[in-house]
Amino acid sequence: MKIKPFFGYTPKPESAKKVVSPPYDVLNRKEARKYASGNEMSFLHVNKAEIDLDDEISPYDDKVYTKAKENLDSFIEKKFLVKEEKKVFYIYAQIKGSHTQKGIICLTSTQEYDEGKIKRHEFTRKAKEADRTKIVDIQNANAGPVFLSFRKKESLEKLIKVCSSGEPHIDVFSEFSQDRHVLWKVDNDELIEKFVTEFNDVPALYICDGHHRVQSASNVSKLRREKILKEGGKVTGEEPFNFMLSVVFPENHLAIFDYNRVIKFQEGMNQKAVMDHLEKMFKVEEIPTNKEEVNDGLTPPHFAKSINKGVFSMYLMKKWYSLITNPEFIPKNDPVGSLDSAILTETVLTPLFGIKDIRTSKKLDFVGGTRGYKELEKLVNKQQGEKTNGISLAFGVCPVSMEELMEVADSGNVMPPKSTWFVPKLLSGLVLRLIED
Image (cartoon, rainbow, N blue to C red; front, top):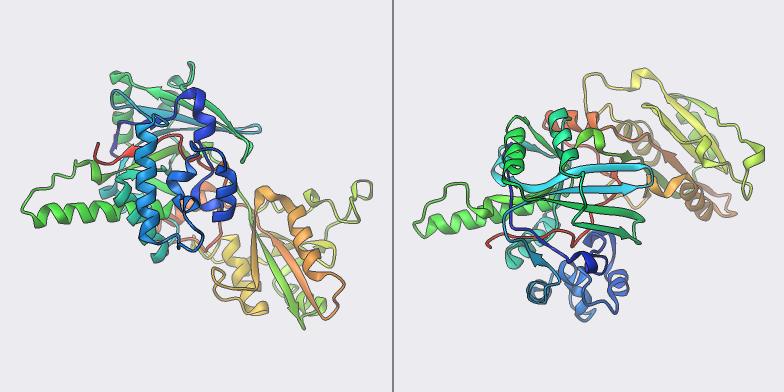
């Protein structure tokens, strides 16, 4: 795989905490405006510029893209973001609790994405894809890196460790996500060349998060190539617009959490009908409650957490159940169909609740694993209340493994929606790259 160093833009170490922000897509307009209130240095002014405009203006209005460009130019002019004197790589560590993951921030090739060497596991949505393409083109920047991974390679991990052994360039704690983000600069020419050489032997990269950012970078590359060719010029493939800002982690460093499902209150459905259906496909067992640790009359969720493939947890009428899938309902030699999220849809969500497209169904809520099983109980109990003319319930799903993700991507398929929940999330505003610099 081809990687390149680049002229990075980073905050000054002493002001990094004021600059960095949550990703643009984890806050709505109101939340983002509140978060950035009183802080002209918040990167949300760059990657969510609608907070600086009237609420009547759509986030997809041309005025928002223009404002985003103006704000980015202002950040650079005011030295909120400072350009490196030479092309560099960065080592990026994310530390949450006892978990640490370290990777390299570099440029990767949009051509290798187009060729299928940078592999996806999700489809993109056209509206969001068009939005990200427009913002990248107008800002002439990759305002946030793509989150990629590669199959573990010991020599590369050792190199990453060596380059992150000294004093960091930036070390910032995010109050929003409650994790540390640490950046080391790699500006030694010999080490830069070692990284380039090491990645030459990596057969593929895998998108973990940021499918729309990858596709938008590819779209911008295509637009700029076509413009040059139309004007009679030549394209070598080495032009800056043929590369995108990426952070690449070894797959064994990453943590994927469960992505769980809550069925909203279903009028007319009863517990017996649910149990009768489930017992045809699962071994259903009530999970015993540890009476000493019961809090507010609810089963302690850690007793119910699903940690084995093919085993689901279910919360129904203030009780937790274990659902062990009958092996005959687990497809063989099918990297997508054998995923727990796919099995749950095929055996329960579709036949029992009529949910065919989980991405668009209004019967479902999704809860990322970091919010815990207590959140599942809370949502179900709120939906159920004292009502007896129907039910609400939740399903805990075993986390997908990186090996499963890579197998799906290698097969050329995509995973069911809402299958992966990666934590920690990448901070915005830590590293930026101008495309034509």
